[in-house]
Image (tube, rainbow, N blue to C red):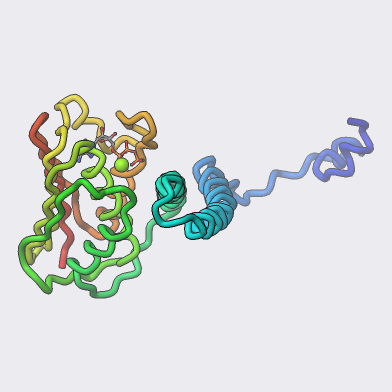
Length: 242
Ligand SMILES: Nc1ncnc2c1ncn2[C@@H]1O[C@H](COP(=O)(O)OP(=O)(O)OP(=O)(O)O)[C@@H](O)[C@H]1O
Ligand SMILES: [Mg+2]
């Protein structure tokens, strides 16, 4: 770079003219974390739109196939994978941003059912909701939707050969949601690391699900508890103040 070129970029101009360098601006530089947060947000938006396009196009292709065509299953598999990718991008985006709950009162069973109905690939699991009907929470419905989606997805993934997924909602205070599966369970050495960002035991996991859940629940003043018996199953309890 020539001196003229350097001078044209600002501060070094004073140096090249023999003047006293001016003190640096005190405007704080963004932290590496906020840089990463912005990068994640840009990436997530860049990925999400094409994904929606792929999903729509593949759906149309699938509908053009005869009903009994075995390629329909291939289309379903592509759609499941796209949905999974979309969820990963969604979690990365949520995890990299500050969490500021926008509270309103809503029905917990309704929000849990909505999360269950939008989960990809859960056909071999018996699902039930027990406990109080009409229990409400004063919380951010879309953030809690992320919590339920991640916890239900983990429960389904813990039962590759199928099993029972039971949810129990209890009135507070604090309101509690217990998500119980009859899956593989979690060994004690793994339990200690569950909430570390990017910790995963899955070949295709990202390890952001539980850390994101904890951040969201704690932003509501609540907590997440884990009880597990290897070989028998796992109970994840979310408590949120009313
Ligand atoms: N219900 C469960 N039963 C058994 N193991 C679980 C359960 N929930 C979580 N785990 C363990 O905790 C680890 C971390 O879970 P987390 O949801 O944070 O990430 P992940 O599921 O591996 O990846 P992803 O980012 O796709 O969610 C999992 O890899 C798994 O080993
Ligand atoms: Mg997960």
